[in-house]
Image 1: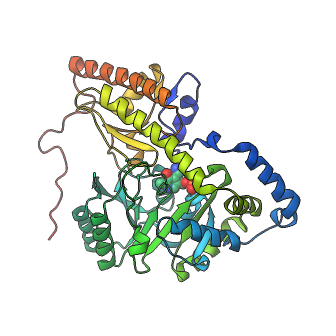
Image 2: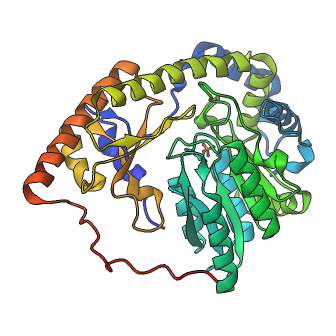
Image 3: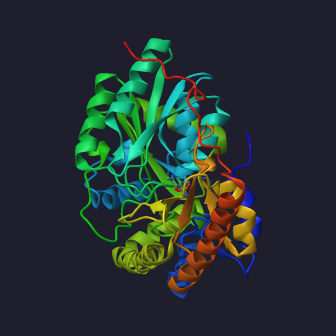
Length: 410
Ligand code: PMP
């Protein structure tokens, strides 16, 4: 286990003089906190004897029903029996990996991918193999190649982990055509899909795509979370899995923590029962949408030639790629000097890739702070460009024959 680059950055990035485009923290201050305070009080005074007691490892049955209703907003039809509540979707990722992965087993992920998923897979000694993406999501030919290669290596692929909506960190959404091809390839190779969808309801424009779960035939484990649409502090996530898998996940959860926080579950149960939560999601969407626009508008207006970036339709993140020869990690001290923080791309790969890229998040700073943050970032990039033009590139341009050849597949 190693500390993630994102975590290491937190201490510096949270200084008040720094505009942080680094963390992915939801803006919970936008919640009606006083009303939530009353709700918490009511849970204790009216349901305290249950709320303060042990509960089950599968999760409160009423909350599971409510989560099933919540998932219908994304077209997912499920039975509460097939669902396990987890401590955020992070615990679901841990449990799924614990149940499926033995040391050396292959786990396929998009490139780049969610940093703490990489850390979880690595903690169970998975052989993490990346599959490339373009602006429509994972490239089907690369997925097919990775599946065939693992078969030829005699290494079982335990699952393909994907974040199809507003991917963390790339901000990319998988197109409908790609979704169908991913499902077709994974079914043909008999490989499980782990669909991680914490951002799906945070869409600012465009039309939603069907979930992989709703296109699967029992070969998808779907992970959801209320961290981005309500609060990460309550730690309510879930996994939806075929019955046999779900039973194993519950056993693994039992040995990890015995019981969930009954208290948090009852708070969320009451919230979903008594609050206009769909309106709250709309309010989040208009706030985050404005921030996304501020980020894209500032990048369009200010970024130097040679930079590229993604255009997310939702979620929290933009993925930016720097001009040739500029190293995002080496640039970070200069950026912090300019009082702006971001996460260098290398943290989102299990291998050495990502040096020319960075994740920029727009969820937490205000639109004005975002514009100022991009201004500072541009100053840092321009400083690096001057340095490169004087002393040569920080990332050497690969010379012919310097990279290991990729063996052809039969
Ligand atoms: N998956 C992805 C893609 C995420 O971005 C996050 C949080 N940043 C998680 C899972 C975990 O979220 P939580 O445990 O709060 O539900």
